[in-house]
Image 1 (cartoon, rainbow, N blue to C red):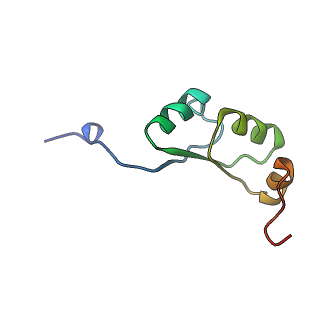
Image 2: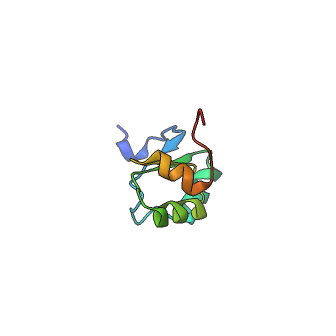
Length: 79
């Protein structure tokens, strides 16, 4: 019988809390090498958004998407 840790899992996304110590550019790069994207949750401040973009995360889940879009210089949908 195999343990859960020995089973290879197929996943397309990893979604850790944004401020976890394993949310690093190295982790993002390793995930990307395996075809896995990272979506972090729930940063709500510009400094966190800037950091996450700089390390290459694929998606940011936030309570304030309008502010995030403004921070990134992107128009809101329907604008």
